[in-house]
Length: 195
Image (cartoon, helix red, strand yellow):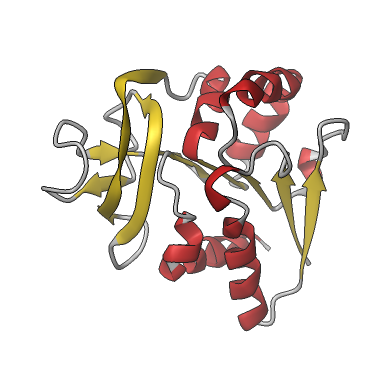
């Protein structure tokens, strides 16, 4: 049984990002893989040792700092979770929450970036389709997971996303898993391998 924790789905549900969980569970069902979704609300205790995958999506700006404060006491547990090769996947502006892990730094664009995304990636075969509506940029040239194709999006931002082990952070929304089944299968293959 694969256990997937969806963090704060009622607060962090902008742009239909809950669709990432729907797309992932649909793909799991097609492969006859048993799973359980744990919806983690703001008063719930996080049990990192019980999760095979954790997902967190976009939310209104006023919720981001509150969520970060809730997660700060779990910093060491989250880092251990990542070091143990479990999947942590953050999309949209949720990338700004995890800068406290000191794995990357988040900076602000001077102007909000709004555009369609067509990107190549080393994670899986096929281009990644999506959308960006963000003020945030992961400030790194290391562990980049997406390369924007020329002519799409901001010509000054041709790299995007961050990966360390099985921690993935991207400002691409869409929802990204609903639009990219091959990325779903990338995660499913990791989940199967870890089990």
